[in-house]
Amino acid sequence: MKKGKKIYFASDVHLGAPSIKDGKKHEKIFVNWLDSIKEDTAELYLLGDIFDFWFEYRHVVPRGFSRFLGKICEFTDSGIPVHFFTGNHDIWVFDYLPKETGMIIHHDPYKVELNGKSFYLAHGDGLGPYDKAYNRLKWVFTNKFLQWMFARIHPNFAVGFARKWSKQSRLKNENSDESQFLGEDKEWLMLHARDILEKEHFDYFVFGHRHLAFHKDFMDNSHFIYLGDWVNHRSYGVWDGTKFELKFLQ
Image 1 (cartoon, rainbow, N blue to C red):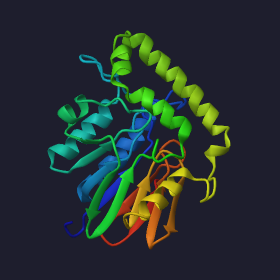
Image 2 (cartoon, rainbow, N blue to C red; image 1 turned 90 degrees about the vertical axis):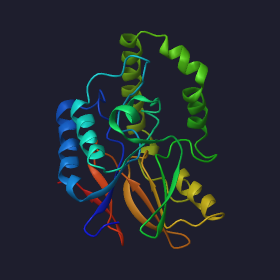
Image 3 (cartoon, one colour; image 1 turned 135 degrees about the horizontal axis):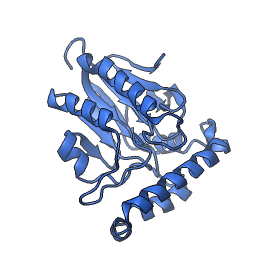
């Protein structure tokens, strides 16, 4: 990594979420942050649920997000790699985003060495055997035949149904115990990381999904990071080649 450059991480922006009062302002805040980091960015990692809903029909994609997509094109056109991880809200990314914006798409956890340190990166949904309820739901979401069937539904109805479901799901999650840190013995991503460390060492585990923002020393000289979100925390991670910091936009 070149001197003065940094690697940035963000997740759970939920662009277009019906529960966000001013969606355009929300998008502008995130895009302005992207603009502020562009000059010193070596790589950008977007770890899932950047969109609150995304489904690519063969000839149709969801309306909106023009400021965000345009800014991402500025990154990739200038040679900055942008990695996009599909989350449980934007799992249906196919070929439009990589072809049009140049983003590198990851549907699975990504293992990478950054300046001599090993990173395990993922959105966090459906990893390991611990999140059983979502594992069953993810099977439905990733089933090719069911995707084909959903694509037969007119976008006006399909997108409207997805937005309504998203709003109800968010309200349910905000009022559940899982909106809080559950403890190291119950946080399924921590349990998953422990399982990984029994087979392979990583210096950093970085996840989104939980909408919790914290950086914790972990077992086997590792670090465990939840990136938080851009709905409540406006938090992001920065790796400068020697240390990882979790920061919050003022």
